[in-house]
Amino acid sequence: MPDVKTTATVTLDKATAFRAALVRNRVQLAKGYEEAAVEELYTSLRQAHTTITQAIADAYIEEPKDWSYDKLLRTRRLEDLRAGIEREALYFNDSAREITERYASYAFMRDAEKIAAELGALGVRVPTGFIDMATVDYFVNYPINGTIFGERFAQLSATMQADARKALINGLVQGQNPKVIARAVNKATDIGARTAETITRTTIMNASNMAHSVIYEQAGITELRILAALDADTCAECLVRDGKIIPVAHAADITLHPD
Image (cartoon, rainbow, N blue to C red; front, top):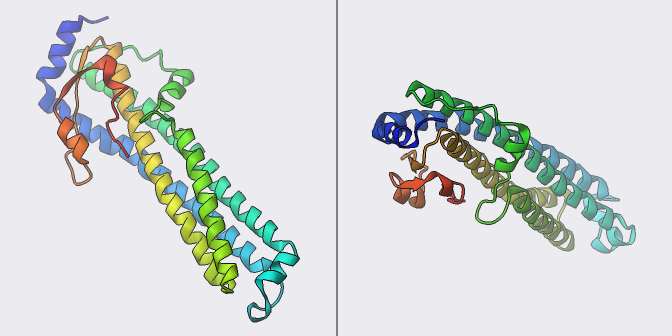
């Protein structure tokens, strides 16, 4: 284990040069994983939209001008249609949760390897053999603002299903044609998808930040300097924290990229 005082001094004294490396790391790795995850999210959403649109079209028992809400209700197709749409919303959220966990795990492992290599270039040797899947799962699922990302997706799922159901019923009661109703339902799921994107990006960035903290602690470093990207996407809270020095032991309890 390297000398704690020496290690911390080396890292903090070279903060300016190290900052550029960290920001490049954030852009090249964590940001790349965010974009790849979001692309998969919206691929999953498009599949859900296709299924929902087809289900609504199939539920109409006559030409749009001849159908009625009561008739649809009497054939019991309304309940089947509503349940089908809710299943698609649930499927999207399950898919979003799996995508998020996968890419957050990638970000943690790759960032841990990269930060260890960058510290090695400064003469600080870091053991990385301790990083197994149990360790990755623990830090990927570390609570953000008191909740783990799976719980946030569960909350989103309930909201998304309720919004889709409301859009469906409103369209049916108003006698709208299948295409109009499908667009309204899909719009409701779009709103949920944007929330899912925020959860995903935050989870992946948090995993990246956690990887840095874990490797620093393994290196015997006792303090960290918070380094914001300082770009157009930097929020006010991160901007205020930029440059602050905190104990490594407390890093996991600070949300560095709040949503």
